Amino acid sequence: MSTITNGNASVHIGEIRPAPQRNRLKDTPVAAPKRVLLAAPRGYCAGVDRAVIAVEKALDRFGSPVYVRKQIVHNIHVVSTLESKGAIFVDDVAEVPEGSHIVFSAHGVSPAVVMGAADRNLDAIDATCPLVTKVHREAVRFDKADYEILLIGHTGHEEVEGTMGHAPERTTLVNSPADVPNIVVKNPDKLVWLSQTTLSVDETMLTVNLLRERFPNLQDPPSDDICYATQNRQVAIKKVAEQAELVIVVGSANSSNTVRLVDVALENGAKAAYRVDYAVEIQQEWLDGISTIGVTSGASVPEVLVQEVLDELSDAGYLDVERVVTAEEDLMFSLPKELRKDKDGNDDERGLGGRVRRLDWQG
Ligand code: SF4
Image 1: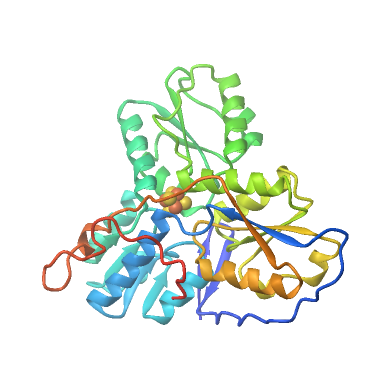
Image 2: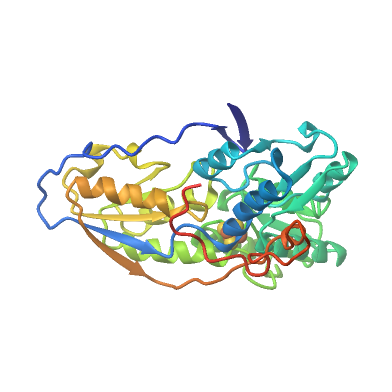
């Protein structure tokens, strides 16, 4: 078993997925009818879908091992499943044997990492989400125009490291509203804010408003940096949390957008909200006296894990599942260019536009 670090989180990969344990939870009486409100959208976004397919296709095309820098997406089940198929996850390109194939994760990399891979003669496939690449391009453009960049994001997150690496001399990281009084800039009239793609929309706007009080000429990004998937999942869980006493968010501890969903649920009416990787983590006492449970999942979570949560909740009497739909999503990204052709040079069927996420993906 190996360990991948991400900021403050450290994840052991190669762990066996615990089998769902049916009839573990008891059906205890509550005052009102039991029901589940299932948020939609939830789960896989277009960037995660593309990145996971990229590793699968690289394994098909080049054979094992294919190296992956960091977790391809922040979900322990996805990572351990790909590992079982022959992917090797590393923290640093220096760990990869010269001449190997390496995939860069959906969270993106700095130019220094790209150069490090080239120095080792690695065949790199860039699975950076196009919406992260968009933020990289903004950083480069504002850097060239002599702007200072205030990047709102979390210290140690791979996406933040990658974005800062595109304009290292001019970027200052703003972790939270509490950082704002201590920010020092050289020219408050040539200042722009950018952000990590997976933050809480509300907290980010609070930070921006405080920054603007200090720096009235602060410029906005050309378009939203917090991505459509993060925003849509937060809107959906807000609506669910208004009616649910308990919210269960499926996703991993190092998934920023997953953890934000827990925060958003608590800020919008849920009395309790818990994150679980797997259904077996649900505790009987969470359900005491609860009639309405909200369920959602982060952008890197396969739907099969949500289904297992619903199955275990049904054992506890939560048989009535109502979808709360706040948006429909159909965005797909084309695969990295290295993977758009098959071995014989023919266009791959998934090359342009990927595919609609297989809702039954089990790895
Ligand atoms: S959460 Fe957003 S930025 Fe991250 S991979 Fe998904 S679509 Fe891309």
